Amino acid sequence: MPVVQPLIVDTYAGDLNGATDIAKLVAAGPPWCGWMGKATQGNYYYDAAWFQPHWRDARDLAGDRYGVDWFRGAYHYLDLRIDAQQQAEFYLRAIEGAGGWSSGDLWPVVDVERAGQRGEVTAQQVIDRVTRWTEVVKSATGQQVILYGGEYLRELGITNHMGCAALWVARYTATLPVGAYASLGWNLDNLFAWQYVGDGVGQLAGYPIQSPIGKVDVSALVMPNALAFIRNRMGVTAV
Image (cartoon, rainbow, N blue to C red; front, side, top):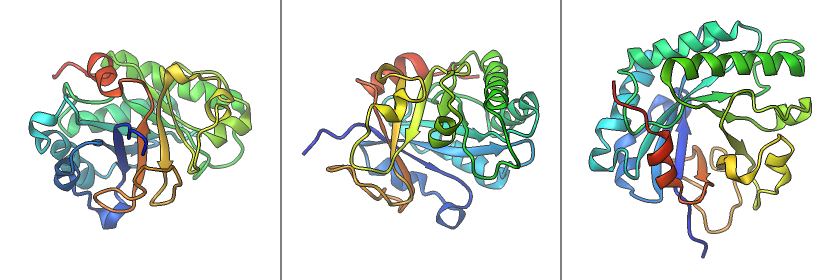
């Protein structure tokens, strides 16, 4: 049996009939070490009634685990047809409205995928939008940004890091070939996480296919000594 790397789940308002049982996830203990929630999309989607209580619970219900072997995070789904600065400011306001950042939080995440994108978008447009979003968020928070991306960026031939410091990639197969991230211009040292399960679909031997809260997306933190890395580099100063 392999040594299971720390695992995080990511959910959104449509998952699990809109409920995410943070308490159950925390109580499951290691290797379950965190929750990532969808905060915003474009400059138009923010389900405050869902996100705000889950954002608070992911800190408060973790107790002594928070910032030690349990972390929370929030991602933004980038709409490539909308001004990136507007989207970044929208995301930042959403986090502030939910209580702001604390010391056990992961770096902000920008999600760049094809689904829901309207019309044709060029590689340069993607690079420009993501880079600008990242610049605004980094300036406002003092933190680096994680890029969630994969096939869409690969098809566009994008290897530019677009201001991001780490990659989070999805591949629901038994292995993660080097090409899955190298083709995007990244190396193993900068690979934050591998989303190896998508809503209960995955094949990585020895790793759970279903989370303690049901069939949701599950990612393994790839970086060596991942928890120490998070504690040392990803925590933000409480405000």
